[in-house]
Each structure stands twice: as C-alpha cells, then as structure tokens.
Length: 234
Image (cartoon, rainbow, N blue to C red; front, side, top):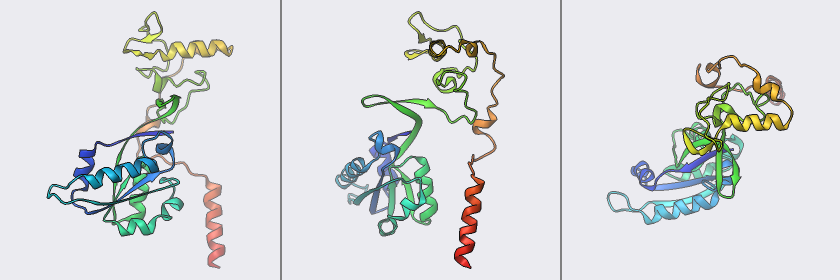
C-alpha cells in the first residue's frame, strides 16, 4: 500500500490562508488503512481547522467528507457537489489522489494535506515499513521475495557488501536488518541458494525514473472502451 503522513498543521494553515470555506476530503484507500487520511482523520483535521485562526483573526468554515478512493475518477465524481460548494479542497489522499482531483476539478484549488512517503506493508500493530520502490524491473523471483533495491541501504543488486554486523544488522544503522542476509536465509529455506550465487548485471536505473511519466496500458480494454463509445453514439 501507499503510506502517507499528514502535513504539519502550520504548513496546512499557510496553504489555506487565501481561502475561507474548506472541504477536507478523506480517502478510503491506503491512507485509511494506515490510519492517516481516512474519514476519522478528515473529521479530526476539520475540527482542528475550525479552532485555528487565520492571520487576520478570522476562522475557516470547514466541512469533511470521505469516499472510497481518490485515485479513481468514478469515486471522485460522487462528491462533485460538495467540491463545487467549497472555496478549496484539502485532500488527505496520497499524491495520486490529489493530482486526479486537481485534473477533474480545475479551476478549483485542490491542496495536499499529506506527504506521500513510500509503498510498504503492515509489519506490526501501528507499524508500516517500506518494501517496494516501484523500480520497474522487479527481481523478487531471484531474491526470495525480499527487495534489495528498497531494503538494502545501498540498493546493492549483488550482495552482501561485507558491512553486516555480527547480529545481522546493517552498518548504516543497528535498527536495519541486512537485506542480503535476509535474502540468503530465505533462499536457503526454499532450496534456491543457486540464485544467491548468481552474478547479476548492473541495474538499468532508467526503468525507474527517467523518460517522464510512466504508464500502464491494457490495449484490449482501450479498444473495448472505444467500441462501446461508438455503439452508444450510433
């Protein structure tokens, strides 16, 4: 899931200074699961803003709402009436949701109430850890389902670096498990140490972040949508 943390209240107040009527929009997706941007958090932030003051001493008029997912247009459309009634929307979704809302509701200002942090998993009660960097060239099949790009402090594709402590921690921090030691143990457990010994070619980092916006397209769905549109217009 995508993990995001709420921005500091003072930063949010600064963003909202030019506006009077604020709609705080929570998201029922990832940020709801990690307890940072769901309906409860939207209500809490709306209450905090009611009690806060603008620089001129006046107060914001706030309302909150939450819906299924802000990263899908069909769900965002459900709250159009509420959005259009507000001066500004403060979104508690990840950056994907904020951008989709901004595209849909221009010229309405859609502001981010969150800092999108990482993609991760819930590892203990109240704890989420980063596990994927979205690098575009997954090697989990060769590393026992443990990502070296994300979990190795040096993103080494061929481990280990030799900086592992006696208790299996990374030399960068005693709080970090050595990813390549974990990979070794996992591959040994599943009887695939041959993969550990494999020498991998240098990474093509261009697949991660170069060439602009990345896109996934299912051509058959695009073609079907075009056919359906033609039928409707016929």
